[in-house]
Image (cartoon, rainbow, N blue to C red; front, top):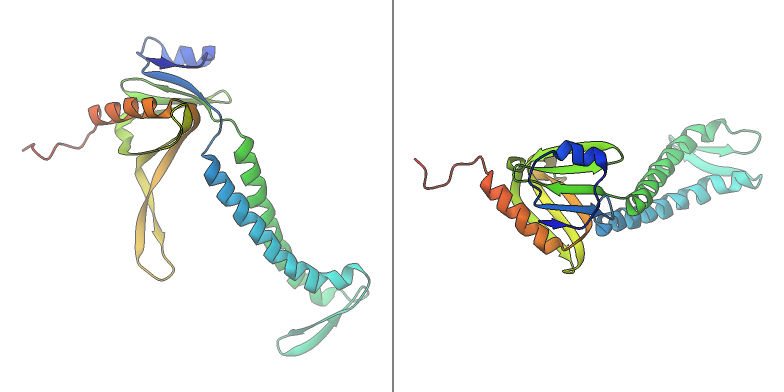
Length: 210
């Protein structure tokens, strides 16, 4: 058994007399690279929308008029005539809020702890913030990715569930769901336990079965 964390009493009660393959505490709720990609995208999004904020609404903030074309008609708006800019301002504001939401989500995911993960012969248990989730090993597809060093890294487990994603210039494709165990010690050793239990609990009959 690989155990590197002292488990909370609520989690111990849920495990009961089950054998534990491993028990670890995760440093993050998802891989840092995933959060960083979202962070960079949100920054680019905010920089792009800020161009419209400065160009379109900037003059109004300093008491000047702004001229724009609406339905082929030149329109002038200013501090005393804000009606024409209300709808464009709401649209720009919506995109700014979307960018701020993505930025906040990326920061939260970077600092959010992942909780505890315990593997038993039949299931993977995740305990975080007094909430427990139990997933039978048969729910995993066997697609496992490990990143990081021997001493600390991330594991991504592919699930059998997923969703169809429509490509802009192509047919729909199936994208499987992923389950993250991030910022844990000895990820390569834990991957061995996961792979072993997934194979043992695989509900799919082998190719040699009749």
